Image (cartoon, rainbow, N blue to C red):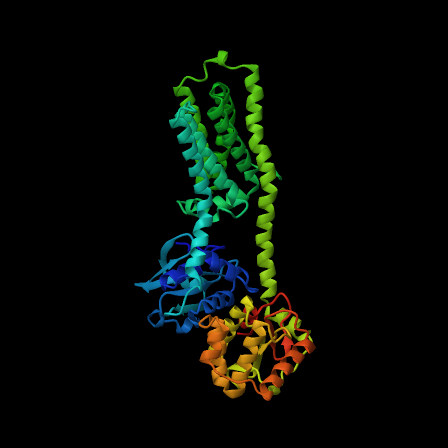
Length: 524
């Protein structure tokens, strides 16, 4: 038995692993994390993705001479040698059988067959209470809403049509034929969406039926009439144009059945090609069934016999009904192309941005600014840490709230990190941000631990009012605190701080477009 290895299922395998170990994460988020990694689709990209989700994971290299299935912890990702290195999820090994899963099937193979392609590398992952995607439900709702756009539009159109029909404003002629056309419109749209990665998840659900291989067929030369026109587009023009024609001008039905008859040879070509290549597309075959369903419906209704119902004007009207979807598509297609290209460019830029070597090169090309202790920054984390992260913030800067949260989390997670918090505010004693900064610096002069607590409560939103801050953390301004305040302002001018938060790593300013969360990932 041949082991079924998917060449494009890394994202799906990771998503499935997380479901098995009961860690919540959206598949879109996982894909973004993986595909933005400079080493995607390597084992390192998977490990880093799991680490971002706070999933404990570790990879091992097992010598086949020392292989013992009783010592393995299930489930685990196994790296396999195919033409491209990919992964499968192994659930168990029992009685000489390996039970595994890829993005196509759940299956089992003899252990010897598995050992022939397995390179000995496994990755084990384990979730805990803190594991999972941050803002999971917010992202989940956005994802679901995006999926519901097309069905919602379709339901609204059907509801409007039903309302008009119920009120006698429109009639529904030849309901069987019209319903067949409507299904054809929906199937055509799903097929079109494949070319722009808009309906990938929907298409995959159909492609998992039997030996279906929709994606490969739709990308083949046989799926195109010319380099710029696909059969899916022609199907969309046909079903949409003829659906509108029957709905708005029922008398054209007697002409449309002859157009349907001219389309039947294409169905023979499509089915014979799929049979010859042994690659089947469920949706493509559905289109052919719909064409023959139209034909049989027309025969049953004896629509081929009445030539007197066809007039010259009907040909002109039908031409316009068929042209309308072509014109609409000519406007939509470039927009969809731009969107698909933008997604590709986004991942390429993310891959470029998340390359540690490029980040370090850009970082160390920056001017270096010493952050002396006499600036008396508020310290988070290990005071003796070798990696010093300096965050320059403003008490009323919204992005600074996130930067402080990431910095604090970073200081907790990494023992070798020292965080220095400085303030950059306007040189105006009446400014509220300047007042907050001045007061926290006064607290820091009195007790650094209290200053850290005050800063945490301010940025976390526990204290949102300056008066409450001064009531809970009392401190008087001193000559020393005012001197430190002025020194921090002078340092910000020298370091050319023009925005907050500005982050430094060992004195080097993080260059645009990097942010503190990027630095946290790249230095981890």
